Structures are given as structure tokens and as C-alpha cells.
Amino acid sequence: MNRTIAKAPQIGFDRFIQRDWVAAALKVRVGNATPDELDQLLSTADLGIEARAKTRTKLNALALEPRAQLVDFIDRGAKLFAGVGAAVDVAPFAWGAALAAYPYFGRVAEFTGRLTSIQGDCSVAEVHRRMSEVYGDREVTKRATQAVLQTQANWGAIARVEKGKRLVRLPARTLTNDGMVAWLVEAALHYQQKPMPLATLQSLAVIYPFIFDQPLAYLVSNSPTLEVRAEGSSDQFVALRTLL
Figure: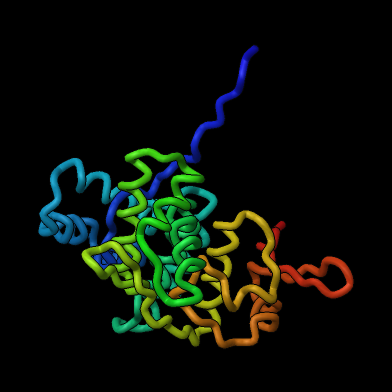
């Protein structure tokens, strides 16, 4: 009898990516810097040739050369986060781009957000265990999860304590720009690949580092890329708008 062996989902995001590198790539995307300037920054990061190439590949997916179905999404995000002044926090852009481009990043964020939602901290081993259940108990899974956690710490979402064995959730940032909020909601939808209940948007585990204090129903209804769908007598869901 032939049996189909289920393959573990593709990992994709397996490198530590500094926030400064994403900021530099974002500048290149909007024409405020050159690729050579980004390469020079990476050359000072004590990366080997192979590591630098793999890091550049991740930055390509996040900002420089996104895959075709994400080009418009990344372009709109780049304009939002690069057009509000030099002091803007690039972490929301980095987070949203990573959610849309790399489901693995999103799954680590989702588990971390859930596990730290009650007491504000959790063990790294708990996150590894959850990821191994989905992606297989492999060394590559452990390395990739460590890379994502290190990245999320660098982006200001968590702190690693007790010699890196525990994660502490840092205070979430409140986003006040309606366009940025709508763009992050869109990022979460790209990650989820299905509509989400409107009532859950304020507390999505996958975007745990950010707080939305806007009336999201109004914000979504006014977005050209999002729409509210009614299911049943009272349930409302948010979905990506299909543009004809």
C-alpha cells in the first residue's frame, strides 16, 4: 500500500534580521538610498559571504524585490513608513512585511503572542515545542525559531531573559496613523489567508507588539484594500478586497 507522507511546511525565514537593515532596505525601496549603501551596511555586520547573501535574500523579500503578489502591498507600506519623517519607527513595516512574506515568521509571532498574553512572559522551550508540532522536530526548525525570536527581540517586541531561556513581552506601541493600522491588518490577512472576525482585530496574537485604538469597523470600511463581510445575523468579518 502506498502512503502519502505529509511534508513539513516550508520555513523560509531562518535568518536574524536587524531592524536597521530593514530600515536601510526601505530607504533603497523609496529611492532615498542606493543598493551600494545597503551592501556597505551589511559588510560592517561581521557576516560571512554566505550569511550576507542569505540576509540580502530576506531583505529582498521584505522590501527590495517582493514577490509579484505583494509588490503593491510593499509599495504602499514603504510610502507610509518612509514618508512620515526620519523619526518613524520602522518596526511596524518590518513586522507587516515579514507576516505577508514569511508564514513561518507569522507562526512564531502568533505562538509568542498567545503564550505571553496572560502573564506577559513564556519560556523559549514552549515556543519551540509549538513550532515543532507544525514544522517537525528538526534542528532546522529550532535554528529558524531562534532566528525569528532574536529578530523580534531586535524589533522591540520581546526581551530575552534568564540567559535567553525566557521571553518577556515588551510594552506594545500604539499606532495612531489610520493608514498604518489598515496596512498591518492587511498584513495579518495575508498571513492568515482567510477573513478574520472584526471583533478580534484589536487583540490579534500575530501582531501583539502593536495596539490599535481606532474604531476599526469604520477604518476598514473606508479602506480601498479591505472590506467588511457579514456572515449570519450579526457576525462581521474583515477580508482583503478583491479588486477587479
